[in-house]
Length: 384
Image (cartoon, rainbow, N blue to C red; front, side):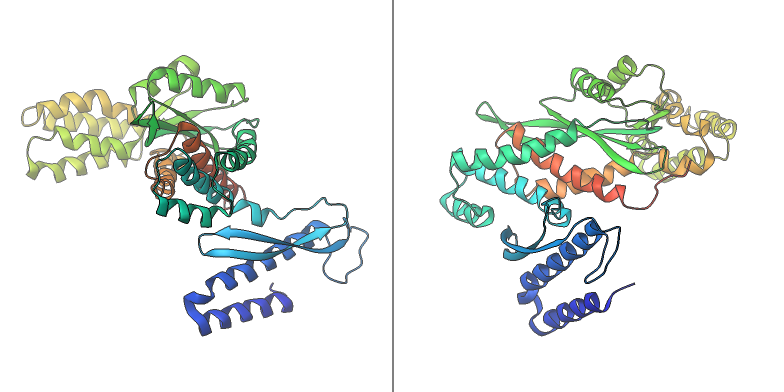
């Protein structure tokens, strides 16, 4: 329930935006952040303003001014303080990590001579510090410590694990190359999603996947009942080497797309897609395999390449039937990772080409850390 003082702040912000429109965005954001930090301090202290309680965790100690650079300009914030210095508002830090990573990436470009003088001026305004190699290095080091700790945190039991890779452009030895960004998502026994880890290297070959999976294993990832992914050859080989006994579900969405390359005529594509979809939507594994046999028989003459491909590949998507039917919708595809990759792409395209692998890893890690934190406090993804 909204308290009177909170409602008053909301009313003030609404009026501000109604009066000044976009020109008031900076001031509106400043007030929202100040109110969010104030509420967070109250939760930390376990008491409201002027309340008395034996459960109190400390005492207010005024405010400390702090100027924060954002994409809509500088915000002069009032950071709530606690006498024993045990409190710092996560609502402020959380939203700024990926912003800082992007700024550092832009600053690195300038320091390395990639950016123009005009871009350097914009970068300096964004970063809030003079763009020199020393300042950039210092800012990167501070953020890297937080992100490295998150990437190496201990894991636990995750029954379902999704794996995928995407590519980013990075400058390497004087040329621009594609680096593979590996990402793992897990669904915990409590039903919540978590970003388990990420890794960046010059290729998506088996060695990179094997090192990545072993790093997850060394962080105590266990209790895996199913892997969900597309059919990357390097990933398949690495998964069998590191987790040989864990079943694998091939992403049905990608399979449906892959099938179209083997359909010989345009007019057949809709019919073939419907037949494959009926296999995926079958009520039991036995029915799915019956429909698969039916598809192989139907197209053996008119589309022999399709039937040869389907006989080998479609059975890899039927592992889902060995698990509870109420989970099928969530574990039949790797769409949860597709949405994460889409968010990474939306944020990284600002940088276009990263100055080095470390810069790419920094921004990707920041984005993933924010997503994972949101999931931890969000709704349950699956019920076991």
